[in-house]
Image 1 (cartoon, one colour):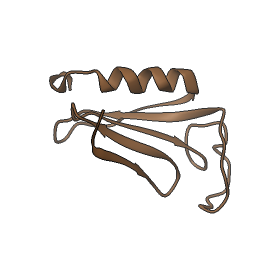
Image 2 (cartoon, rainbow, N blue to C red):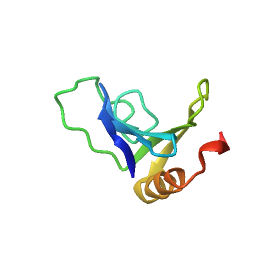
Image 3 (cartoon, rainbow, N blue to C red):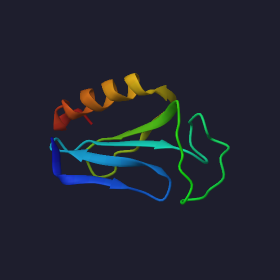
Image 4 (tube, helix red, strand yellow):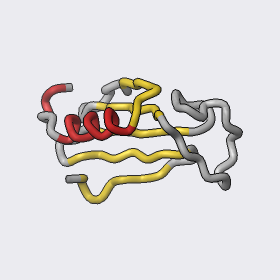
Length: 92
């Protein structure tokens, strides 16, 4: 359940989404990220696939810092997204 369909793409390859509990998850791959194609060129017009990607988690409170982990396979990323979506808003 995303709050107000707040999924968005960014200038890299990836997306971020904020859940109803206020927690945000970002999944990124491509140039400059902790992913299988980290050394790819920065070019927004080139398709970019990855076997592992970077994930970031940010709590709902103002000032919460991003926690970033890289080189994660898709199954692990799916589990992290689900777990973050189930967190209580007060865990940050």
